[in-house]
Image 1 (cartoon, rainbow, N blue to C red):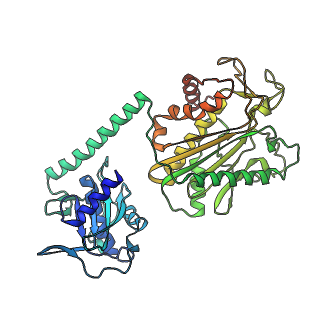
Image 2: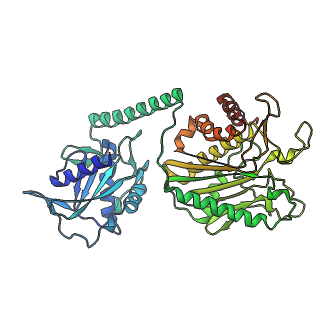
Image 3: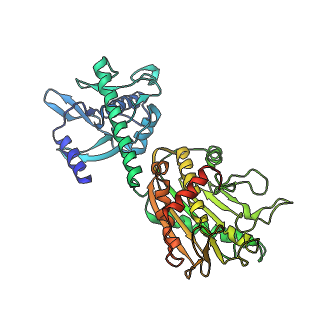
Length: 451
């Protein structure tokens, strides 16, 4: 598909001509000229509403056809993707992302070709005017009309084509969602970045927690002596640019609480409140410093950190170790795992991922999720209620889990994402096959906040 796109763009430059899905423009100053920015935005909005197309820069029309425009800039850094997408996000509602391709013309010179996506479920409107109220009008919808030109709809036929196109996209999306619900399919997603970025983040986060935990007394349960679980994820997409205080507010508002002690809880009490560190936000409940508090045990000594560029890490000890020796509980810490709890914590973390992505990412988002469980050797998988299984034992001490998907899949396919993600963890307990009914039951109780 990439090669096909490259060929089409090269062909467009070989015999350039304007039509309803192609706009050709002279060289524009998209760095500092507000009129030029509005000129580009108007064309992009119109082509998006037309169903997608392209804008070619650096040509001008003469009686002999399209020829290279004069005043070619010394460099083409004024057509960077971040610059052009910044203009679109400034003018378009809903915002969308365009791709920029540098392609050679017949004479060998390179020209920027901007590919504008279609497939929008609602008409894209302008959310601001151009300079002095010119070129682009606030709260206006632009379409491509014969000429070709970018104009507001002029008659019922223009509106019928535009709205019919949007309704068709809504219908296709609805059928895709129904199909996903029936089949349990999860939409694929490209990885947000090369795998080593998330791996480096995990390694640095584990090292940071180890350093903090080493400051506690040797017998402190907050050091998680019998093992712990960790989850890390990376969001991919158009990340909003936020100040430090705005980012902290995003984390505070993104908090979800379905279990009573949620992952990525944002406390406000002195001694455990999150704090800024190296451009990120970090929280360590296990290091509670306030008089009259402390002794959180392993299962409540959370450590988490989130970076403004979409990386997050969460670590918690096993609640089972804190409950050991209680009524109707196994007597020794480090000896058991409750069958429902890994599913519950995974589901709640994914609900947090969805909440954070909605606040941090403009438009579609993807996620790469990793998790690790330690201290499993010799533990038995048990059910407090005894409903699911006879105890099964693990002879493996650690396991790593990984998945990637589009965050939009979490709306309708949460169980279908959780189940294959945690199934390898359950399998190390004497080949236990996790029933989907357990996953759906746990998620149902979480959503009802009765877990």
